[in-house]
Length: 328
Figure 1 (tube, helix red, strand yellow):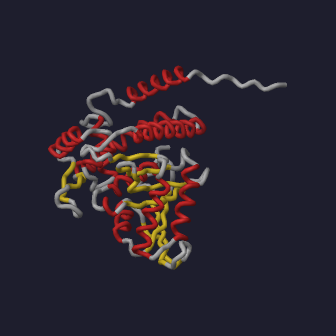
Figure 2 (cartoon, helix red, strand yellow):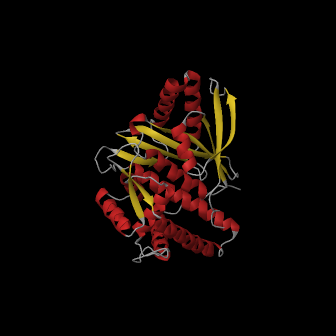
Figure 3 (spheres, one colour):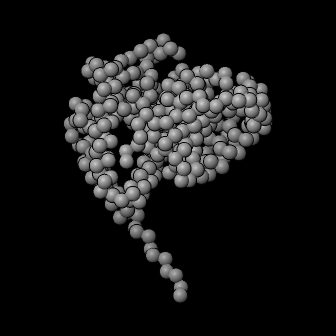
């Protein structure tokens, strides 16, 4: 008997159905109200509290990128939250002309209340679905959110200063060479690594990029004028609840700008929604990176000499578990 392929649903109908589902989702989550998530804040304020709490020390321009807001809107939002006693500004340790954003004690309390409310809202809704339906929902929403983020990132969206800076999620043509080059130059200068190391980074990264998109994997890039100047990836094996943080590097021209924290914030939100534990490998002596890892809850679990990168170094493994388990 000949097989007959059922025609795919017309794209226009899929778009209509997805738009309707998106509008319903926005309504049911309460984003049409003046205040949301058991707070006195508008949706943008709630999200600002969550992002600052997830990345203490984030700068306003990086917060604007995360929230998809322009510079002036972000500035007004920060001023309102500061006046309400929920956040505070501190002079940047790397650049005295810049300020970093932190939650105050009241802001931390509000963040915990928002998290409790949102987790309860999601948990209550999930009780209406079977475990299989829950997993399908998470996978589908993750793919949709990732597609939206990737599309937004690839558009000609520039930073407030007009320098052509943008955060991109997913593969970008040329990113493999850029990221491998960043690693090769840095580790050659500071650790004496050579072609063996650069080849391994490029080969493994290319294999990883070819597997995207994937519900358990992600790649974030910081792009300026068509070049990738920072990267971070989350890798995993199918069916496992363990995430691997890989290829985290920031060009020296961006050191002290908060880009590293923005990338780590995105990655930690991603893993906390999907995995029970995250690990990474690094080398002894990278103190700035270690400080950043530890600020996000990573702890040193293993240290030994190794030569897997073509040069003997003291390798270190850090591991992190979410502060609270993902909603059931």
